[in-house]
Structures are given as structure tokens and as C-alpha cells.
Length: 488
Ligand code: C2O
Ligand code: CU
Ligand code: CU
Image (cartoon, rainbow, N blue to C red; front, side, top):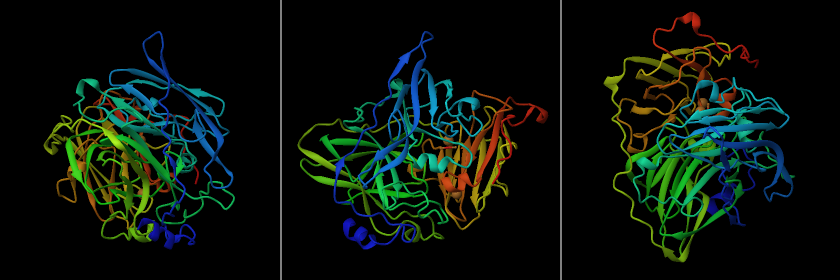
């Protein structure tokens, strides 16, 4: 079925329909290696990322110019435990200035890797922080103002897995690369001579939309599974595409985690929708000898958006799942997976409003020299995010995780009830989130909030906030000297 729909779209150029083409040749899903690390003399876990401009053969006829860390495309998976202090040596061996941002991480502002933390070509930046948040699937990617989308598209992105053994509910598939599988999902377009094309479809309202699905850098990926249950840690690392992940045969599966950690309990669904930068961890049960597939259906972007017009209609394969004839048993999933505090609106001492326009937030484009919001540390606040435009947007906040209080006044779905750092906001809807920034203050170094559709972000749909000690005087608040109004 997917093949039929996709072949109907084959021959259309990208950007017209937005559909994903069918693939006939399959290859094993590459598993990003776990990044090596050493403990230094202070007991800190040290990782080295060598960021390069290189080439990758996607099997499209020619090698494509790509970016990668410690490899030619994507980055190794960084993995560390709650309580550990990490150091990441980010060596920029490309010819362009870049940054690496720790998306979803609770981290001091000057370690966050936002657009003020530029790493010049030939230099190394070594942020360090102590991990203090629940077990989760976070990620890292470049964040240079105006060029984030293309650098991620070229391949600079990786997963950052946080472990928290003290809160491990037990029973979850957890052998990396065996039954605990990272899955970085992107759409690409290739020029006739096999190079990555970032211009195709970039005139759509949401930005670049490709016609080729790439999973962990592979076109037409399959996964051999040898156990009854497999956990997929899905990251939507696409520029603009929204996915509605489902199983090809419609069978239900369990969602166990959202952006920032495990849900309170596994939630059984038939699909889970992810906009750019969102993550979900799902557990799929397989049958001996059977092949199935993780697919994506046309997403629901709200009543005012024709998602099929932007992304194509119908279903396409994301990952084939091939189960062995004989499967090793898996533990049953635990009934309870995490203790998540109630999201208590009454605990909020302050509220703010963020109105999303076509490319602006509260009427303004990003200005590197302007601090938009000053937030006292440790204070709960309700942020009301309203999409007043006719275009799809999402909303991402740096420095950790928030909770969704309501969507258009109604309580959030179970899938939105855990820790989130990015949330979809449909046109003419309003999402209330509960935020609280802990531990780190710096009146002179901002964090970002922004739409994570990368064209929008790069066009300036972003604002800056500082987290300060209560009572900090406005005169102490400023943006870093290096930051000046970006030209556009
Ligand atoms: Cu995924 Cu501001 O970042
Ligand atoms: Cu982020
Ligand atoms: Cu947007």
C-alpha cells in the first residue's frame, strides 16, 4: 500500500506534493556508536567530538557533502548518568562557525551551546556541567543564528542519553543496539548527481520538505529483531516534516517516554505524532518470523492546515522490522514507569504570553542583542503560547523540561502529560505550559525559546531569556558582547 501511494508520487518533483518516495533496496539500520569517554583526574566524564565537513555515499549515485562528528554523517550517541559531571570537547574542524546545543538539557546558559556560544573553525569548545534530570533521550545539534537548519540537514546531530539507575523501573528493553534502538528520522532530497539538496521544497511555508526518508543516515532501513519486544527511541531530526508514527498493520504499541523522560506509565496507542525536535520512546511487540514496519501517516496539524498538501498524503515506511524465527523472551513492561509530580497550575506565581505570528514571537524577530524575558530562578510560571498565524509552529524552551497544562483549555493527552521541551502549537490554538528554571543564573547570558521548524527559527522566530536571582536589577541584565543584531 505504501509502495503504491509512493509510486504515485514518484516522478513529481519535491516541493510539489511533499510525498516520500518508495524504496526497493533495503539495508540494515546503522546504529550510531556509543561515544567513547574517559574519566579525568577530577572524575569528570570526558567526550571528544570532532566535527567535520566530509562526504557520505547514500547510494544515490555520487557522494554527498555532509557534516558529521567522529564520522561522516550524524554523531555518536553520548550516554551518561544522572549525577555525573560531563565535559564535551567540541572541535570544529569545518570551515564554518558553528555551535553544539544540548537540546533538552538542564545546563548553565554559557554551556548551553546557543547562538552566543560560537565555535570558530579550528578551535575547540569544552562545555562542562553536572547532569541532574530524569533518564531521557535528549539530543544535540548546531545552533548558529540563521544557519541551524542547514547544518542539521547536512548531518550534524546526535543523541544524548541520560540514565538514572536509581529510578529505573526495570523491565524495559535496555540493551543498546539490540533491543533498545536509537532512531533518528529525517527527510532529504538529492540532486540528480547524488548530492544533498537543501533548496528543494524550501519555498513551502514550513521550509524544506524532502522526498526521501533517511533513518540513522540510511535510505530504506531495516532492523533485525531477536527479542519479543523492541524499544525505539525516535527523534524527529527533520527540518520541517511532522510524522505520525504507526505500525504498518495498525497494531497498537506502547509509548513509554516523551521528550524529557519516562511517562508515569506506558500508554497504548496506535500512533504517536512528532513535530521537529520532539522525541518518543516506544515499545513494539513482534511476532516470530514476521516482518512489519514502522510507518508514518499523514499528521494532524489542526483543522486549519492541510497536512497532505505540505507533506503528501498516504503512508510511507520509516523502518522495516524483521523478527527472527525464534525470539528471546522479553520482560513484561512494568505497570508504572516513573514518578512524575503533578503539573500544578496553582503553583505558578507568574504568567507570560508568547504569541506566534508568521515568523515573529510577540511581534518581534530574534535580536541577539536584546533580552526578551527575565525569569527568576526557581519560580513556577505559566507560559501561554498562542499560534495566531495560519501556519504550523512548535515551541521549544531551553534549559530543561516543562509540563503541558492545557491545550486550548483542555487537559493534555496522556502523551503530553510527561516531561516536554518542545510542543506542537496548531494555528489558532493556545498551549499553556508550566516552566520552572532551577539552579543556574546568569543575567548576562541568555537561553533561547523558539519555533523548532528550522526555517522559521533561522528566519528569526526566536527569543532570548535570562534566568536571574530574584530581585536582580534590570541594569544588570544584558546580552553578551559578542552578540549583535543579526543581519537578515
Ligand atoms: Cu533544539 Cu534551540 O534547540
Ligand atoms: Cu534546545
Ligand atoms: Cu514555526
